[in-house]
Image (cartoon, rainbow, N blue to C red):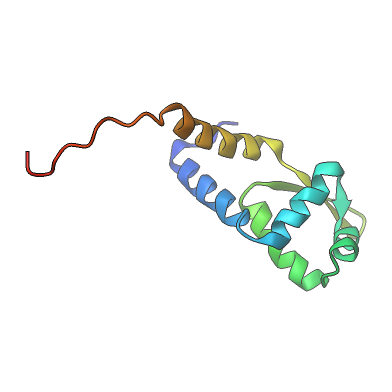
Length: 107
């Protein structure tokens, strides 16, 4: 399913917002290795489930993580497709980094 172009700026902003917190970065680093349940993330990170839930919600809303429920536990994994969207957004700036000369505003 294609994402409507009107939601792309929202997803990009949400993605960079989600990447702006050290705890969320730590969560993503752990998920790079394997899918983990909330209890494992809490234990490794040394945070309460309520604190972690807030950060996981932010990551989910940004589309950076997927979740699935198995019994009473929720397991999280990376959503690589959304990381690709952010990567492409930044790559577009790199490709178009040659700026034309600045004109004087009084011309």
